[in-house]
Amino acid sequence: MNDYGIRQFPPHYTGMPPLPPPPQRPPQSTGSSRPFLVLLLIVACVVLGVLLAWGIREHGERTRLSARNHDVEDAYVFVLAKRSNLASFLTDPRTHLYRLAPNHAASGSITIAWQEETHAGLLIGDRLTQPEDRQHYALWHVDNAGHLQHAVDFRPDPGGTYADFHLADPSDRTAGFRISLETGPSAPQPHEIVYETRL
Image 1: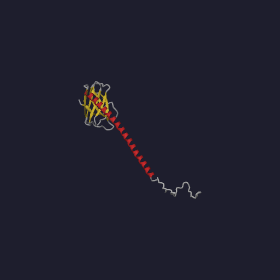
Image 2: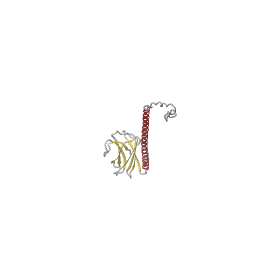
Image 3: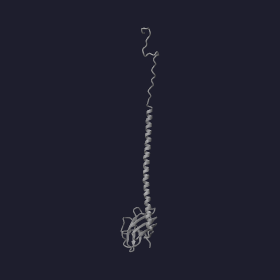
Image 4: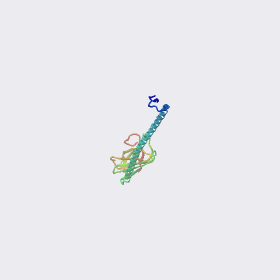
């Protein structure tokens, strides 16, 4: 009480009883959300990895396809050039055609397009008998004196056989051509005649 008989309260007293403190909430546990976040992160990494692998594979496929297209274009240009050269050679008035007939052990047909002036020739074969793996065919030039000169070795192709050749200097004018079946490297004389010009 003060000098006047009035009861005095502390300066912070409001006349109301003090409020109890708010109830304490239990701390929220983050343990249940952490595995979910880890799982979400793993799923995101897997998805990104799959997308990255797909992108790399697609890039590789596009690169291979582009290279293959270039190869096809080059091959097509080469075939067109070969056809053009072939047509020019076959229609040249200097070109003479020799047809070779098979013997009893062979089949198919062979034509030799030959230019006497340039000593250049082209073998064209169709449905030729396929030799064994260790064997090949050899083309021989036959002159008027009966001398044989090796021209080219080849193996038949099921889609059509072509082989161009050039002789350095035939000793005499051409009388025809022969084809032999050979096993080893080019020999000075044919081993087994399987196709020849029939005059």
